[in-house]
Length: 237
Length: 312
Image (cartoon, rainbow over all chains, first blue to last red; front, side):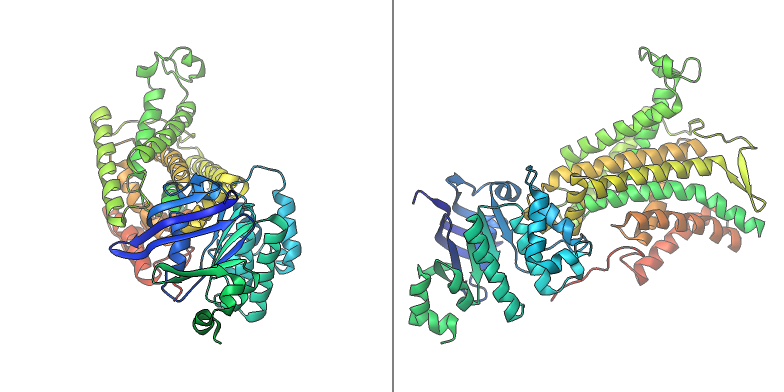
């Protein structure tokens, strides 16, 4: 467990009087892609928000051996976490280029420009629209931008909140290839929250099942794919 | 025709003042998501500081006589105005850090209550320190009876030209900050999407203080310009605040360009409506409020603001 990047121990979270998480335990090791599967309202988004301390939380969240349970969201981002929220969360009034520049807000090195060019090569459509407002992009392009912007901070840990939501199948596949590529080339660990279990399990190493705020199962991607209960609930088999 | 041009030109001077305070309100609104009603009073405090530094009473400041234009006056009025603008910015940052740290997280009502309380407190400090009677501020621009250029037979006074030059330079600096610096970029990101800006590591508290600082400087500039045209008195910026709120409502709370154009329109409404309807000048504030209410009814996000879009 020495190369553990992220761990949640007994994390609870609540919105006012409503408790959304009842003691979640999970971990992500270096270089892993871990998927959290769960239905609507199971607490997937809340789990990611709890890690970034964006919701009232108890329990312990560790990042690279440091307790970040009580840290500010901005500090947690500084410590190497990038969170791609549901609904993309791009800056609609800023240009595509400015979105990427602000994504590198925490960086002080001089490779920001070359990273931006790298993303424009990967997604030429973003390069063509570099001076356009992000709000004018299509849903798929905005999701590409959201992922690129998150990657601009050169995170060690990426949190991805239902990136496939509302996108066309071809775009989703392209996006998931990008995740796999980022993971392989830059060693970025990822915690991926998804309803699209098929694709998620294809790129994931391991997974957890989340039901009504509790982890009810876990296993390797292979095990989960072959689990009859998972197949019935998430894979539509 | 000449009368119309003259009225338009007369309105332009007030327009520069309203524009400056409206931009101040818009900037702090962009930073905090809340309107700071104490904006005008913070500026007025700056105006009084400028006068105090330029008055003989302050001549103990060692060596300052070098910068003076009048015997016994320690600072030239321009230098003391610039110093006061800086002090007002620092004061605004300090007030923000001390009293308004959670300004944007608190509910709109609580934030509003606090800014009203701050308005009353700053106003009380000003009245107790400097009294309520009007004081001669002095001329920032030549304002004699022959200091004008003729435009189609109407008089465009040097003070109006000078005030606009100052306001345009100030707004230009703010625009440069927003468009060319990393802090400016993060400032725009914060305005655009507060939740996402935290997720790229931006610290809103720092930017909120910067926003207040810029606003404090602009408000002090507005107060000094307004005082140089009439008198410096304790209710000067309260009146201006009403007009500027109308201007910023008209232009849209997040748009600097809108705030400037809103300032011009409100100032023109203030001179033209009573002028042509034969209303007493006391009614001119009603003209501003008519503009404000009309906008709120028909286009609540303003002429240049972003229409709020709710995704469902």
